[in-house]
Length: 393
Image (tube, rainbow, N blue to C red; front, side, top):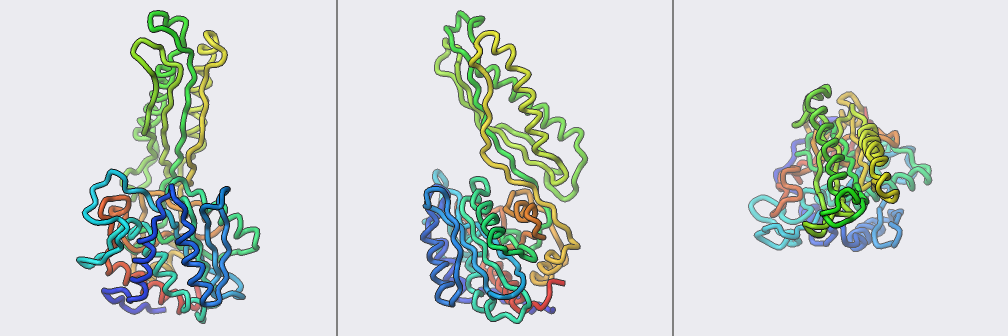
């Protein structure tokens, strides 16, 4: 199908919805139910039912709704509802203002990624009435920003309900250029238990900081190995996997051998790499250090907690959903992005996936976050084209 040129301005309805969503505080530490219930009620007014799946204490929910019920399969429009906080950032206006100025919509979540959700919602009626042979599934998740937690429940619920989508479009900010790959994000916490003693009696102690430092050194060695030896993957800003330590805590006084230390680290793996094998190297090195620790005190050792495991994503320029996204966005290009998304989890579930949405990741998580109105208009043209599409091919 031929996609008509986009206006430079979004419709009043789409912009109003985007402002409404930005003005709802859905920082990951908070509940997202106000936003979820708002969207549920908007859909219910059109006669569209929503499936909600909750976290353990029912303070947060995913939403899954089918626009075009009864059709044999559907295309998912996926977005996360949570945002990162703005504590300590230097904003020139209220992060929840959702105001429009200088051709932009301003506010936390405007680019990442409430504008995409709002524009999809503003076209819900068109999707319901679409002549397309497939439905549109609206899939909205919680806690993406802290490890893609909610979408796992959403995908499991979708599977239990017998929903078998044709494809998925994740609307993260890519400047409306379809993205077909991103790295994974695997993040862990290591807790080291040593044996404390007066610093004049070090042979009677196990220094938790020093043991942790040996493991930190292993991670640094791995990072240097990735940079030196790993086959390059063209198209990424950093075309090899990385490892880094982000936090380190330990010790209580200069003259006390520390009993406890803790650090956090991450791997950002290429789609062609094996992050689980990377973590296995760290575990093996930790276990090799423990026998010497146990000779002094058997209760010493290493403990590891998983913070998040977000798989890398690798689609293809030849996938039907990628070609569809290119047509709808009026783009001949594809891209690869450095940031993680939920796309890898949808792909793992067997759903062909592409990442394409309005705005730039350079604005996400920043003070004075914004998205250009021209990008919203391009996304609207994308949605109009999707509603009129007769085939993925």
